[in-house]
Image (cartoon, rainbow over all chains, first blue to last red; front, top):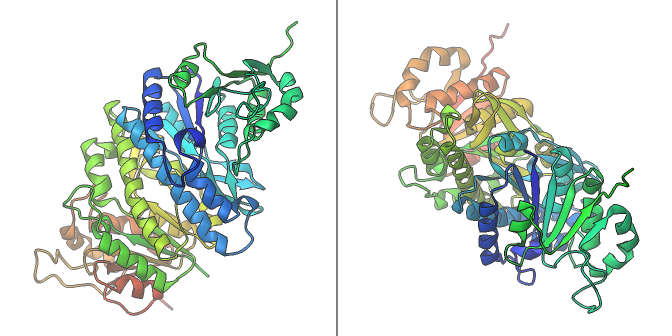
Length: 267
Length: 267
């Protein structure tokens, strides 16, 4: 069986407007959906939302090391991410999912913000044994800039490629990719299916749907996910704030969302 | 500057008699001592005490994989260790120490219970940047037995050797090595200084001072620490339940405890 990689966005599992506030009912519902879908092997990656982003922003971690005052900011950012991760893993375990944290900052080093080395032996062994590894966007050490913010999206793409995953499910707080920003533009329509080639033409439109986030909005997400799609991995963006969408996407059932595929010309 | 490795035993930072009970006043006092000592670079490793051991024991994790019912036990054991780690890192951060968790199960794979591979790039980079990495005894993946329990003591020894540390400080709940079990034998006396050669002769006596613990008692501790001492790293065992002993040991000051040294014959 080939691996599925599920991303749960920070805007789904936290209240982005209230610092350090998890959306516990959403976490609980999603743990149930994941348990019910029962796909294996499964890797979960979650974002930072109101746990990681405000501190990372405050200390300018994304820009790398500038002075020693940022060092404590790094510690606090990681500590907040473990707090959020703990809530998610606790919820998964309570629904009988053998979830195990995998701390990115202890196995990844980036170079100018891009994954340079990632130790995957423990994670691969976990998958073999039936565990569900749970990673997250994290403050990590960077060989060029001292430290960096590693987004959950970069992790998703890199893991999916290295594990030769067959599907990526990205749970966000909108229904998928739109031809504009659905929150401000009533003429924006949902794109149900798109190829990499078509995506290239739509990028200027997608940019309109950006969300304030230290790791970039929907366009940043697309830029990160493209290498995985290019690799032949089907990628589905669904609204994880709506019940059953993540469940259906995990099961490969028809669901409201955006499917992104390489879309090779046949013949 | 050469690295110091500090181990805080599970019996110091938790109440071993009450499951899932941290000794918060001890954690708080030790965080202050570490902050005041201000030695750098510093790596901290802590044990599991009443957080990790009872579940690891209940699911027979130390004996490796036997059946699928243990998988959830592994998840729970790690989750409890992160809970304890969080309390310690929170306390260190509150005393202005830039502590960062390093999760052993995400960077170590053992073979029959012994460290086979450990990714140390992130940890080494943390030390370079002035962070205090905080590791712990953990349930880890094992290439031969599926999984294993990696003791904090094995980690301490391996890290100290690989980092070419100059000193290991081991904080336990007794004053050091005794010529018997001080808790039951009133004639047992504290050994202030011992060489590896002398230690060999005393091993049958030390065995008397064993504590029930999935990772072995004082003799198990000595067996783990010997390779580091052999490597030339001075190792000091002190009573971390007594104020200022860890502080003094970190500073290299005279302190009640047992100093273990290679003790090469000169000339």
